[in-house]
Length: 79
Image (tube, helix red, strand yellow):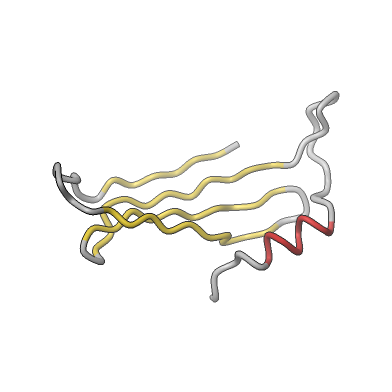
């Protein structure tokens, strides 16, 4: 439902990139994933993407099932 991204520096051909992804927030019906693109340990790009659990028929938000909240919590970064 929402994407925020910042491109800090351009990546050059031949640069070795490292991608990091973690869960930054878990709500009752939504979850935020944070991304970082690093080159030589320096941030070149950052993004936060919000996903919402929805009912397929009504397209209304629904609560994230507990079993998925637990799995997402295991991927959450330390504050």
